[in-house]
Image (cartoon, rainbow, N blue to C red; front, side):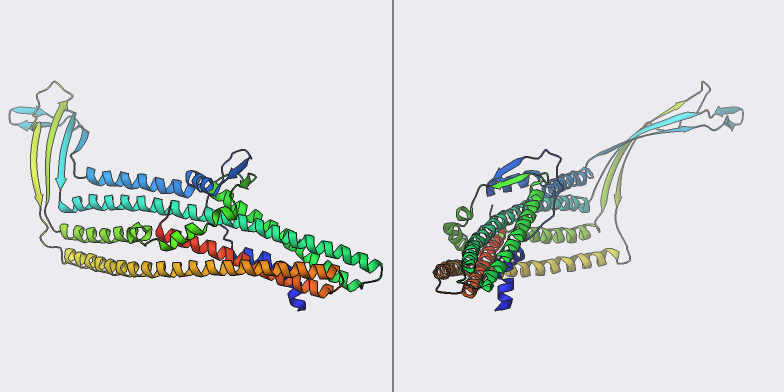
Length: 439
């Protein structure tokens, strides 16, 4: 009993601190300090607009788009300009009685070429898949940021409720302590009665200070997500009563799980298609490469002497490159790509089963967490009534300070269980929303 009394005041704070995630994701901007009044929806929207992780995901999409068009450009005509200067240092070609000068000259040419094979076409398709995967990753990152903001928003509200509960407990104990001191002064109560209440009051004051530090940690994490200066004051305009809507909770449980809406599943499908295209690329590597070119060349001599120019100004050509023998290199590449594709199919099948099981488990978790939340809420209200009755009896002299501290300990434990159940309910709801890819 002594141990419980000694630690009860910190139970409520510890239960909340255990359930709250602290994140560190984005750098802060250099804006002036100001006050932000935000609802949960506004906080999520602001984080999406300002979060650097989402900005980086957008840059990945731009890079993937550029690579896609670079792969397509490989199959389109290429034009190159070259210029060469040569000087044979006065050398002349001797043809018996005739000499042909070889003065300095500039050789300029423009080459237009185009090449195509099946592997290049598949490479363009692979680049398109990479671009789609970047799009999905952006949506997934956005969802993750919104979920973190929602968790932190709820955590801040719960932390404020913790402070409210502890403050109410402290006010009740302080009132009883003052009454006990008065009774001690008139000799109707022993000093130990007042001392017990003073210790409990001190423990509550320490818990309040710890809870305030915890609340500041939550707000700091929220500032990082919103990418605002550290001295920005954030005011939450939504309340727990507004956000804990039973109708939305029931609708979430009743919603069917569509695999194709889940971002992890979408990425898995694209990875499987990517493995299939890589197998196709390995096969196409054994097919011919067809190329064509046109050269236009101009040679300019730096002399008025008679010269001999045997370079044709125009030249066209067509080439076909056919792989004949590669010491089983292509065959082994195809074998490796086929194994990777079959492995990806197995992984995708496992992922489908795991996601279906996960959905069932998360629904069960949410149901259980909701029932536990309601039970702990009722228990906390009951323990509050018990504490109030014990306090009234103590005021009237029908019970001792020991009974008050014991009742206070039980109340704090009930409040601690309620806070923990509340956070578990919130986290279970957010986890199911993420699986369903709810906006």
